[in-house]
Image 1 (spheres, rainbow, N blue to C red):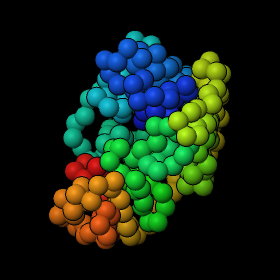
Image 2 (spheres, rainbow, N blue to C red):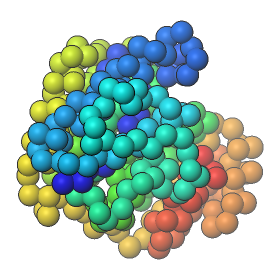
Image 3 (tube, rainbow, N blue to C red):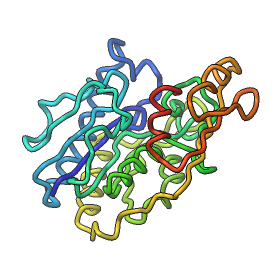
Image 4 (cartoon, rainbow, N blue to C red):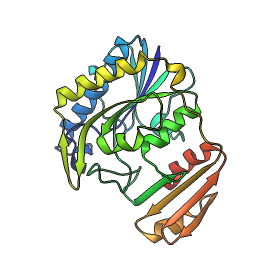
Length: 265
């Protein structure tokens, strides 16, 4: 079994401040250690379910967060950014049996995590086909575009509440809940235990029933805090200015949305 994992940091347990997520800050090491631990737990769960190859995309900031020495031998890690429109799921293709997302967080404008955002802190709202668009929604659909079902999500409670119905076989672990600038966090060791258990359970189900079919049309809406950001980005091919702070892209090709993210957000 071949498994793909995309890993972020703002949705790991106890991570609450931006300083904890920034490479070089004195608070960063603990968050990166927990990110590694949660990814390791997912890998161990996958191996227990029969996985013999796991590809992990280190998908936060500079993409050099994971301590690869802590991961099992059958795991390969993508570090850094290639520039591909596949972004946080760069490397996934139809040879993988399942995809998983670890350390993911609530979307821009949501109150479920002090670090809620969608790619950038310049936006107030990002929507896809009328739904609040988290990074998880966008990239789980990118996996679906490649024919790979998403079966596991670990992150904050609101993201899980927003995402539960997106994928029929989705197993989840809510490692924390946020309100305003605070978080209520699961014990780190318990978070890892639950991630391992849910990953194993997810991969032991019938994966042939876990896929989703993407819609035939896509409407991608981005609202910015500053009107100047919206105006400037409205000139990107395919976008139009919907109001002073919102740009809209409508397309039949989901890859157009993924390309736009690379240049607009």
